[in-house]
Image (cartoon, rainbow, N blue to C red):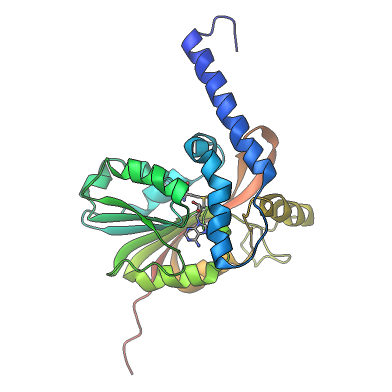
Length: 263
Ligand SMILES: C[S@@+](CC[C@H](N)C(=O)[O-])C[C@H]1O[C@@H](n2cnc3c(N)ncnc32)[C@H](O)[C@@H]1O
């Protein structure tokens, strides 16, 4: 920062450094151990509650491709949308002016601390958006929906296969399923897909597991098993404060197949 930097922007840089330090401290401490589902909800709350107010700023530089995912989903007016593992509801803002044309957007999450941020955000679209405390593996929106997405949540849901099956169940045939998340390739990636080296395949899952994020080579194939691919890209992302490292992530949009006609 130059000595000519205005005071208000120096104060802002200092504030964001303090806020980043807090988030980094909680990321370094990681999640406590435990393995049943009640523990999972409690672990999320213990992990996120102290950083909930600073969550969005830091994740802006960590969770790549979220805006693009929302833009690719582009739900038409009147659509019903569900985000499973929606956290603070940050992704609502990526819908922009489209939000007002939607029928309903549910931000579903298990963590009360993040949901209280989401609830405040939802007040901007009181007729459309709502924050719902529920498990992504079991949430029922009460009707078929047009679009369901996971933004960096599939890797945090222990029974992610059940969450995915639940997402597909609530979608209408022809509806869109979206996901963006960190991942790693299998040891022998299929032709036409990205192959990560063994260092990356060993390093990243261990690094993220500390914070309850479980990178998998199974998410992307499962998404493709459930839906017809509309868009899929495998990419590398930068990390805050670690500019020399690149972590793999994918962006996927698929369409739910129509049921086979009887007979
Ligand atoms: C990395 S955050 C991503 C939040 C948000 N989607 C975003 O893009 O900012 C992962 C979220 O998944 C939520 N989560 C984890 N397991 C869940 C479950 N079983 N049901 C609902 N939400 C869950 C966490 O509470 C957390 O908010």
